[in-house]
Amino acid sequence: MTIRENYEKWLKDFAGDQETVQELEAIRNDDKEVEDRFYTELNFGTAGMRGVLGAGMNRMNKYNVRRATKGLAGYLLEKPEEAKRGVVIAYDSRRFSAEFAKDTALVLCQEGVPAFLFDALRPVPVLSYAVRHLNAIAGVVITASHNPPQYNGYKVYGEDGAQVGPEAAAGITRVIRATDYTDCKLMDEQEALKKGLLRYIGNKEVDDDYIAQVKTLSINPGLLASEGSKLNIVYTPLHGSGNVPVRRLLKEIGLTNVAVVKEQEMPDPNFSTIKVPNPEDPGAYDLAFRLAGQVGASVIFATDPDCDRLGVAVKDGEGEWHLLTGNQIGCVLLHYILSSLKKAGKLPKNGAAVKSIVSTSLANRICESFGVSIFETLTGFKFIGEKIQQFMDRGDHTFLFGFEESYGFLSSTFVRDKDGVNASLLISEVACACMAEGITLYDRVQQIFREYGYYVDHVVSTTLPGKDGLSRMKEIMAGLRANPPKEIGGLKVKAVRDYLKGIRTEDGREEPTGLPVSDVLYFELEKGCWVCVRPSGTEPKIKLYVNANDRDQAAAEALNKKLCEASEALMA
Image (cartoon, rainbow, N blue to C red; front, top):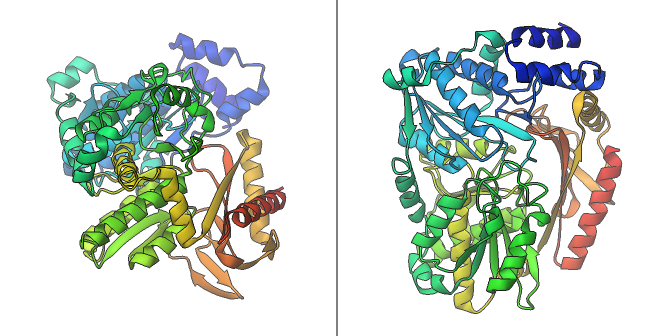
């Protein structure tokens, strides 16, 4: 069908939905807007689907949610006995999250698949835990993570508590594409409750067990007991789902001096106090910095709306604030876990850490120094979750820690996605350890750099929306594949990893990358530096990751800047 035919079909199919009809009629004469909403369907992949809210095939709305859910139900019902285990559903504070979650539950019930629906917003890690805890066959979270307010999304989890992998995503997509929007029906809520297909999950059934499990992740509980009351923290949930579990966890481990940014404490789908609810964005900390000055805090925590990511700002000895990068937080936590376990004589001989390919090589150096194996995965925490399951199935490695540069961290095996609550516990403990030594958390970062070298990372995101943007991203990747650079920023390209082809090429020799197929190019440079290019799987962006290192901080920073400029020019 043509774009206009798709548009007219929606007007006909949903003629009884006055709000949708009015929204679509308002854009009738705007060819560009009609094209953007109807040139394609909202893509469903390993990260589920995510998009701008609105009417249309390429927008997040109740009809796409219902169709995706019927697709999920159809996929699960290919194994009817397994489908009886049901699906757990959680949601965050975004626009229509609660409504989309209920629609998800009632479509599942209509298809004969039991639904466990949380009675209020919950973080991603709680959903991941609940899938395994309730022995469900799958999970769904309604969230767009750290995206701007106009976005929402739909993430699907497998029975292991990790986001579904490529095979399952393809299977769900197959059923979705065979499903007409008008065939997606909701069961009446009271009927679903009466039949036992719908069950609401209260605040005790899962949450207590989850918090109890997180507390077991403390490396040195005695340190929290002795130093915790001295640690002065400011916390902001950025209007999201972390407010209750993070504060509860911090209180129960003995951190009594936690000041919460009141203006950002309660759920707000408009995220009215910030430009974007992203702990990577320095602007998200403005109110937290102000409160920290009032209460004399030395560390600030920020979680995103679905509380799977944690940002940290720390004060140095001169009273200046520094926003740590995701790589810096990950390496501080990794070093703390390994050094503490080694000191206690508890570091397993088969210990392993996992990180994404776009995360810092400093982690490799740290693991090497402790004799711990490190594994790399594609971007997406689902791949780290898969690695955890492989370790457990084979018994060949003991998982110790996993992280991504985008502020995602995990030290447990009972959750299979990044966990902002888990990370809050660990970074609090590191801060307490630093206090006991008479240094700051910022000092600890600098100690690690002095020991292993200064690693500087930078991410450049270029937004390319719409049909033209998608074409431009494909052109960029195709151009780089056809003519890979011989050098970047004066550094020789030693090898090229093309994850779409699954091949690493060095001096004309080819070998498999060993990772799943993905549209990613990775350029290994001299001096252990590297540049990686990948289109985002959840946003209309192409991302450029640049990592440089040197024994001298200024030299590392200058080299990173030079590589960034050269890489951006290469893409242009």
